[in-house]
Length: 94
Image 1: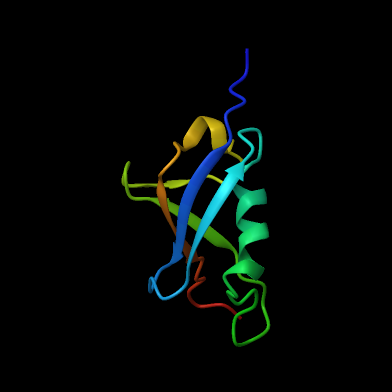
Image 2: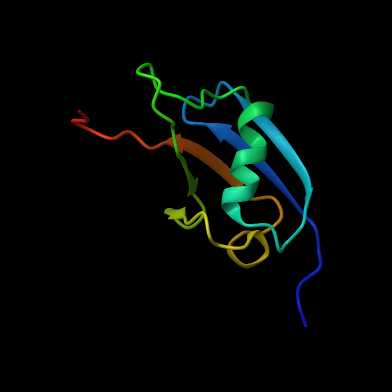
């Protein structure tokens, strides 16, 4: 039997200047799908200054780890979790 309880989460960027309360997230949603939906809401850049696409990682401070984009919200997260979106910075690109 799957968990059908919708989750309510708090999300911020690394600087904590941009924050959002995210309500009623379906548990079957992947973390990656949730992040994509949040980028516009938080008005986070989707490209670096050179025009390359930015990928965001989700830090879950409660567990001190990054949550993989393929993980399901209902499996990896709990209602009330506070998440931090961090852009993936590639060092030494061409």
